[in-house]
Each structure stands twice: as C-alpha cells, then as structure tokens.
Amino acid sequence: MWDEDWTSRAACREDKPDALFVRGAEQNKAKSVCASCPVRTECLAEALDNQIEWGVWGGMTERERRALLRRRPSATGRPGLENAREEHVKGAVTV
Image (cartoon, rainbow, N blue to C red; front, side, top):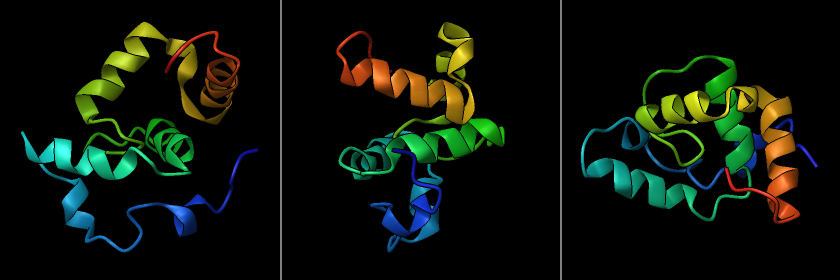
C-alpha cells in the first residue's frame, strides 16, 4: 500500500535536514537512517518524480539514483517503484 502522507512516518523526520545533504563518507551515515525506514520507497519516488539532484532520498545518493535510472528507466516515480517493490516482495528482483 502506498503512503501518500509518507513524510510523517519517515525515519529522518526528526533529524536536521542538512544531515541528508552531505558528501563523501557522511552519505553512508545518512543512508543508514534510511535502512529501516517504512516509507523508503515513497521517499525515493519523491526524488525521482521531482528530479531532485542533491541529497540522500530513499536510501540512495544522487549518483545511485542516476545509476538506477540508467539500469531501470521504468523505475521512475511512484508507478515504477511501486511495481518494483511488489516484484521485490515476491522475490523476483531487487531495487
């Protein structure tokens, strides 16, 4: 089920926003917050839908999001990620 009001359930909701807009090794710390986030897919879709170029969104850096789009152009935005998430749950592929 897709969460339209995902920001209220985000694992980073109480963190300082600047903590997600870092470079280098600090990105791994930011991504670790996303690891157990219940709305990780919604967050990633937000970044892809709005072509957000900076920061960690849905556990992915800007470089990782670009690589995802090169590998799976159909994974853009909500519909593509929702399908990928369903396939992942079924064990067919990983995103």
